[in-house]
Amino acid sequence: MENTCKLTDKFVKRKGSLLETKIIRLFKQFFKGEEIIFSSYFINNCEQDILILWKEFAFIIESKDFQMKEPFRNPEKDFIRIKKDFDDSIGYVYT
Image (cartoon, rainbow, N blue to C red):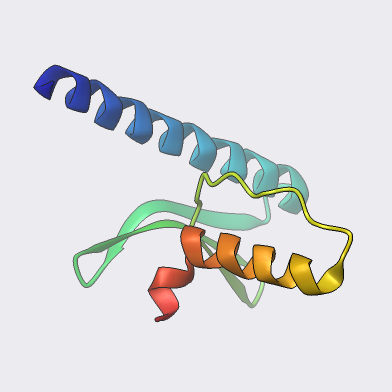
């Protein structure tokens, strides 16, 4: 069981690293070398994923690998689903 947990942790870390790499690659293509990128930096002993400085703008990116559900055609039901997806993925930070 312990070995399975270690493998799962290793997989999750690797998947997160690959996602961050892909995000950085996309921003580099978009900004064409005019950006400064910091990845896996720390503020108050808390790890942050990506900081991109471009001209007078700062983009703070917290990459999350979360599967969003297909939206409904009914806007009232869709709002509930979108809110639940948000809360499940990153909403806990804001409560």
